[in-house]
Length: 228
Figure 1 (cartoon, rainbow, N blue to C red):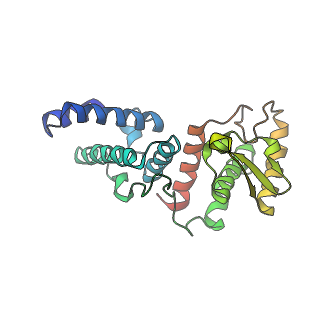
Figure 2 (figure 1 turned 90 degrees about the vertical axis):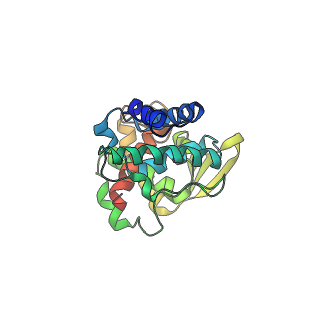
Figure 3 (figure 1 turned 180 degrees about the vertical axis):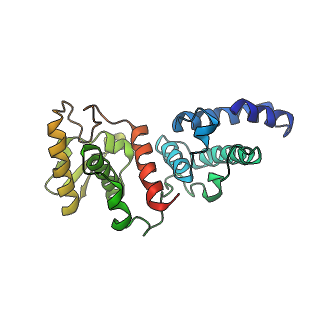
């Protein structure tokens, strides 16, 4: 799939060698992030997943200009996939790049994530409560997923969450009673797993979360909530 596109870029579009190398690097990076390995899996890529990749790039200090360039690569790739009949809907049609270096693209418009849409998405077991907690913390506090991954049990105290950001800059964020109750509810499930790590939110195995897991989970729920 990727090799066919690169051949198309060289023989039909007559892109320069430099451009084709840049395209290949961008696309391999995207496919690795999304864990897409086949034409069947590329059909499942939606706009939310592309936005997740954008956030990942920005959080890893890629400039807005670099992100725009990578999105341009994706637009060419998905336009070609649509032309070849591999996909029916182009996920890039609703994607716009970041306006500034510090601005992160939003996953959904304000008002799209009402409790009526969110509540039915989560099961009432460990994974469902944990995923709801990840979702609520990220969208109520605006912290980065990397900060969520590294959050410890002791970071939640007296109605606040302590967040250690870049360059070890500490922030104290107040949380509402509903989020406190959700943390307590999750804590019951967590204790049953006899988790050894101090990290607040963990995998079902008891091990620490990793950023790609968070991105894919949140993307999945957002897709269901917003119909993307």
